[in-house]
Each structure stands twice: as C-alpha cells, then as structure tokens.
Image (cartoon, rainbow, N blue to C red; front, side):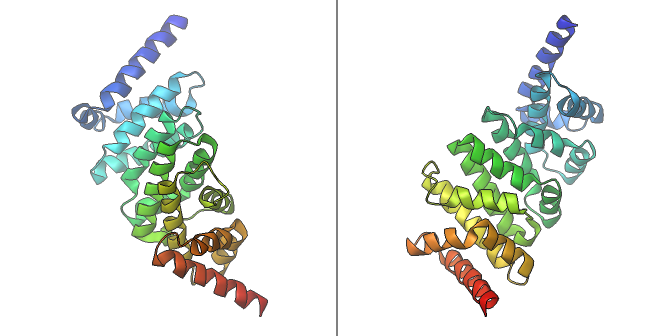
Length: 242
C-alpha cells in the first residue's frame, strides 16, 4: 500500500509538472479519462496526493482556451478541485488556483459560474488568511477584470464583502498599496452596479463599504469610480434616515 501511494504521488507530480507545458496541456485537456482521474483524486483523496492532482487541474484550466475544453473542465467538476486548493497554507497552491479561475473571467456566463461556486468569497478569505502579496495582487486583478466585464454577475455574500472591505481598510497595514487600490476599484464597480438593488446596497453598507470608501475619498485614493461609489452609498444611507 505504501509503495502504491509513493508511485501514485510520483506519477501525479509528473503530470502536474508536464501540465505546465503548453504542448502537454493541450493533449491532456483532450483526455476525459485523465481529467476524471485527476478530479477524482483532487476531490476524494485524503492523503497529500490530492494536492498534485488539483495543481495539475489548475495548470490545465489556465491553458484551456477553447470553449469545448472549458466545458470539459466543467463536466469534470474541476472548479471544486481548484476551490479546495484555496484552503492550503502554502501560497503557491492558491496562486495556481486563481490563475486557473481566469479561464472563466471574460464573459457573464463564466462569472456566474464562479459566483455559483462561491469562488469570490473563498479567494478573498484565502487572501485574508495567507497575507501573500502575490496572492493579493492576483486575486485583486481577477476581481477587477471580472467586475469590469459585468459587476452584476460577480455575486459576493456578506462574509465575502466584509473580507473585501477589511482587505481594503487602511487599518490593514499588511496590504500593499497596489493590491489595495485594485480591491478598492473592484468594490467601486460592485457598488455602482448595486444602484438599483436596495438589498445589495444595504449588504454593502453592513459589510463596511461606506467606511472604506470614505477613507479613500478623504485621502484621494482611487479615481472617479471611487467618488461615484461613495456618493451612491451616502445617498442610500440618507434615504434610509429620511
């Protein structure tokens, strides 16, 4: 049994390394059998082997450019394998997972797919727990790009919004300026998209969005979008008190 586990881990590590090659990745993406094996290992294996399987899937997802290959990844529940990587304490695994998520960021259907699997909240929680500048930047960049495509399709629950606001807050001394500004830009898009959704506005206010936007305006951080988002939430608060 021990020998079998060692051999399996060696093979999975080899597949993960090979998946970084564009040529190998394209061939692997055409194999439903291999994707099924990797997905099954990444989701059900309790030993350390699942990490290598999940990493291979993240690398493959990053290179799945055609819709047919993306559909194949979805059929094999690759998204849940990548989501599991966000729970690991070694930052290279969440980093690979976020790179894998980018295959779904360029259209509304993909963003709704990520939202349905609570990916936004989980990536933000990983950033908060990990305190990695690389992870922060990749997560913030992904969120900005997604909200630029269609902020209304980027659905984040109260827990995720609170985490986002805590990452932006000036009280968070460990957040680098570049990532903070990107997170702030993404929050602004989310607030602006909430203009006709009173429930979402209230959730944003409850999460602390008004406070961090006020901090940004006071220090002249961000652009016109930040000021617009701040005004929108202030007006929402005023209408509640009237």
